[in-house]
Amino acid sequence: MASMFHEHESDGAEDRIDPHAVHVRILICIAAAMLLIYCFCPYRLGITIGRSMSPELKPNQPFIIDSNYYRNHRLAIDDVIVFRQYGDVLVKRVIGLPGDTLWIYEYSDYSDDKQVISAEDMPSVLDFIDNWPEVGGLHRVSLSQGQVFVMGDNSTDSLDSRDFGPISTGQIIGRICFPHIAGPPINRWTKPIKKARPFNRRVKTSASHDAVKGAIILME
Image (tube, rainbow, N blue to C red; front, top):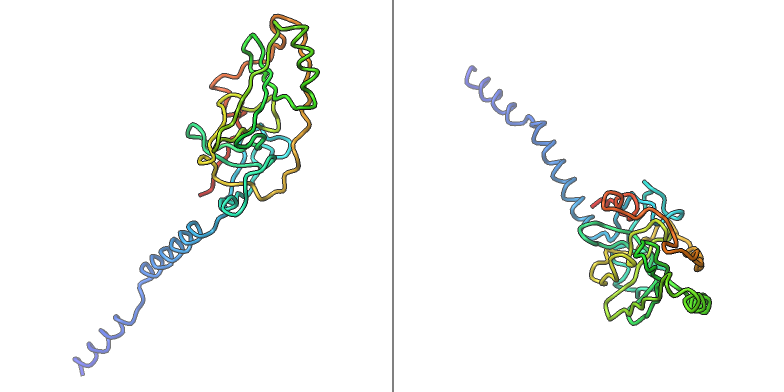
């Protein structure tokens, strides 16, 4: 009888489930599911931490990126893209495609006020340069194959291709698919005041870049 009792007691111990082992298995299943989603789902969550895309994207506003969008679509003017630059992840609007030529008005005092000139504004810009050549001049940017010119919608508070030049298509992570972002604001050329220093806007320093560059946090 004693031996039978010990035998049944041993069988009961073997039938008990270890709660710790169950928790470990659940965590492994969750991790595996998240890995599968990350590998096969093209969508990523981003959070804006800058003002360069205001008012369409405000600071701390979340959005969704489609990382596979350009596998089936071509880059287009006005696409709002996410890309890597200098170790940061930035969000800007495409305003120039491979093969395009853009004209930028730059001031002779090397201030940060650089304006991309539209074809509509070009006659008045050329007329201003003829009368006040000492204030500034036009700089041509020709985009080669694989190059894209990007700008923030809030152009007076944005670190973009006017500062670091065109980006390569290989730097692009994806296109913002949600929320829907309207077309760019109409940034007409503003005639400078005739001065040795036409504007006295604060020049960005490295310490201020985090606030203006329109960087994002990627939830990967």
